[in-house]
Image 1 (cartoon, helix red, strand yellow):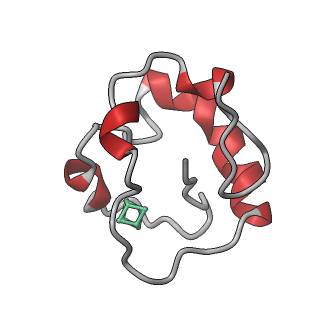
Image 2: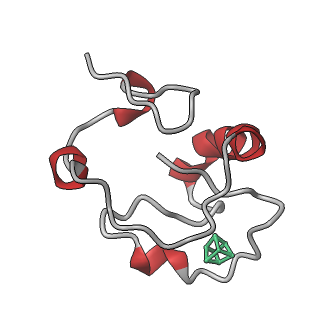
Length: 83
Ligand code: SF4
């Protein structure tokens, strides 16, 4: 999981169509409201991603997993809790 810093996002919308699993939605979208606070909180705590990287090796495995948040969420950056 990554988060977008709400104060640094200029709402250009470029990222939205680029996300292959449609995980990025405008903050005006009702399903984004629950994540607004999470984005704000963890964008201040987690390291910034400043270089393009390949998708994680297990990205496809996680694509259709329901309820990834909060069931698999860890507040530690880069960690994943697998139950
Ligand atoms: S690409 Fe996405 S995160 Fe970056 S400024 Fe545009 S809307 Fe915000």
